[in-house]
Image 1 (spheres, rainbow, N blue to C red):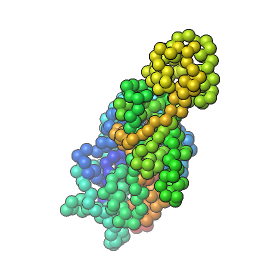
Image 2 (cartoon, rainbow, N blue to C red):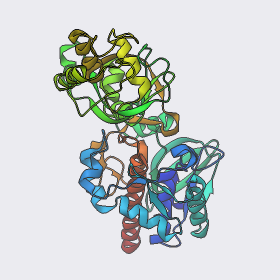
Image 3 (cartoon, rainbow, N blue to C red):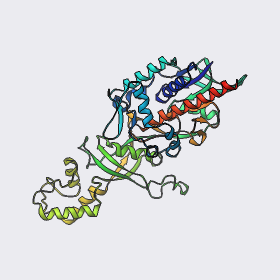
Length: 428
C-alpha cells in the first residue's frame, strides 16, 4: 500500500509529490499519469518556454488575476506565492527571468529545463512515476486499521492512505468526484480569442496596439432570474490587442475572455464589443484634437497619422469614417471627423464565435470551492482526499498565473498530507 497516490502527472501533481517527499523522507509515493508522457502542458506552455509564474509578489494583488478563486486564494498566497516559486526553482539550479510584462520564464527559454528539474527531483526523492495509468475508479473503503483509498486502473487496484487529485480539467475524474459527494461547477472555456469578420481589420493581421475593450451587454437577455448572473456591464479589459486572420487576440482579449467566460458562453459567443484604440482619449476630447489638426494641416487625412496607432489601422479607420484617400484636412467635414473620433474611441465589432488559445488552454469550472478547506486543500466531504491545480473551480488570466495556482495548491496540499500522516504515525 502507498502512503500517497497522486493522480495526474502535471505541474500540480509533481509539485505536491516533491514537497511531500522532501518534508517526509521514506514516504511511499506514486504519481499516476494516464498519458505516455508527464508534464505535457508544461512542455507547450509559453510557446515552449514555460511561463512559470508572474512577478507579482503581493498576495492581494496576485489574487486579483483570478476570475474564479480570487477570494479563496488570498489566504493560500500568504502561505506560498510567486516569490516562493522563484526560490524553489533557484534552489534547484533553475534561474528565472522577468520579462517587461511581468511574466517569468527560465533563463534557458526552454520548458524542458522545468521538466528535467521535476523528473530528476522525483527520481532523487524515490517518487514512482507511472505512465499509461488511466484511472477507472476511485472509492474510499473502511478496513482496519482505518479508511483507505482504492484506485482502479483497468483490471488492477492500487491502495493508499492519502489521495491527491491533480488531473486538471478531466470530465472522467470529475464524475468520480461527484460519486464521492462533491459538486462540480460545469466547465466552460476560458482564455480564447474572438472571431470577427470586419473590413476595418480584414487585411491587417499581425497589427498590435494598446487598446481598451468592453462587452456591450445584451438587452433582455435570458430569463429575468438570469439578469444578474449574466450581467456583462462590468466586462472591461485593456492591454495589447492583436489583430489576427480570424479576428482579435492578445492580452486585452484573453483577459476579457477569462473574466467573461460564463457570460460569453451564455451569449453563445455571439456578442458585440466596443474598442477604444486610443485609451488616452475619449470621443469628445479626440474630436477637439482632430478639429485643431484640421486648422493647421494641409495633407490628406489618410497620410497624416496624428495619433500613436499603427499606420494600417489608422488608414482602415479613416476609410471606415467615409473619408477617402484624396480628402485633405482642409476639405474634411466636421461630420466625418466626428465619425473618425467614434471609430477610434468607440468602434463596435460583432463577435461570432471563439478560437481556443491552445497554448494556454484553460477551463473555468471544477470542484466547487465551498467544498475545499483552503488551509490544507483537503476535501471537506471526503477526509484524506486533496486537490491541486485546475481540477478545482479556479482559473486565471494569461501570464503565468495558472501555473502559480498549481504551485500554491500543490505545496499546501503537500503540507496538509504530511501533517496528517505525521499525526496518524504519532497516534499509532
